[in-house]
Image (cartoon, rainbow, N blue to C red; front, side, top):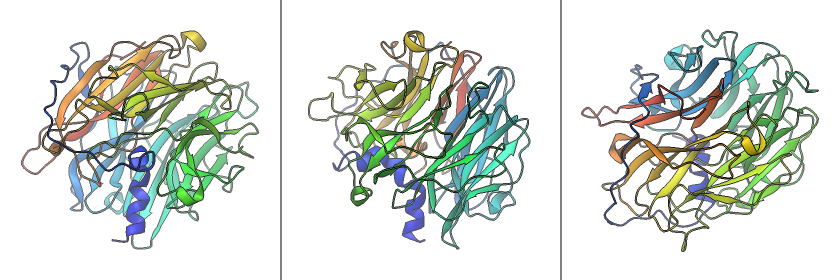
Length: 469
């Protein structure tokens, strides 16, 4: 298949692996220390199962979650049936709870790919938002048209989170990649009811923003931020005062495919009409190469006062950059950011490698009492091989806006790499998500189990009870 199209789907999946470091992937046969046992306090709930049968996918696989909530309803989206020969999946699935995470229903979208009545070859990079003014849930996703050699960025809408309409085009001209969506749900905001999508151009990194003021029915022409930097993998955060803050990775056009990338933020204060030049959160932080794994980039959230929090992998606290910690910064306005601080999940002398964070902040809390939930993946031993690497899933929480963090707890693992779909690296998705609903924090994450013959068993899970509240 066309190499440019293939790169379109997975380039930022290895955002920090490929651009925040120029080191090769590490190997070696060091003996791993035993991982901590999974927490006995949380039972896992399987949200969905890949039941598709198209021959060009790796079944059964689900990955890459996004989540949004409103009142007692929470909806999570995810990719289903990772394709064999290129990135993207056969469809997008969703799971909905209307009782604050007590019970769940899951289904597939239709009308996106040829597998489910649409025209695209594949779909992926979905994220979800709720627009309170117009009373609609909105999922954005990419439609990949391999034969026609282009991507289309679309949204689908639902008034109940269960029944979804046909795709609506946001952009079909810029070769969109790595989009994200969020809406302004503060009644007192001057831009109440504005929804924002951010994306970048494949292989080039030109940053684009589009705004809808009618619940996603129509979208404005793409707007670029000031300055000359390029980048991507931004997650849109809308503050109560209407300011939009998008933490992301940025670099110069000449180094877009090689890095290094700086953790930055782009801000709009006029409802998406214009966007400022990226401001630095952390200048080109180094990252340890995660062996044979497509690692996620930064993850962000905001609390009830609008304070924005961002977490990313960073090995600068380790002597010799031997493995990644997760590092944290926060801002009240998206312009002035706190000094990056290491989240003390494991000792700096440990061999644990941390990556693919999923951060959420509780909108019912704020400031020095803000509640945060962070899920993440890790290897117990950074320098491992395909035979010895074992993937773990854990989480930590904070009740003081990230000044201190709880002791880490493990939710799943160890998972062998052979259980995880291979897509230019073992793959649980470019990002994972956590979300608060009615003050209860839930994580949404792929977990893999042992194969049955050649059939994989990777599905989306949450927990029966909240991880934080």
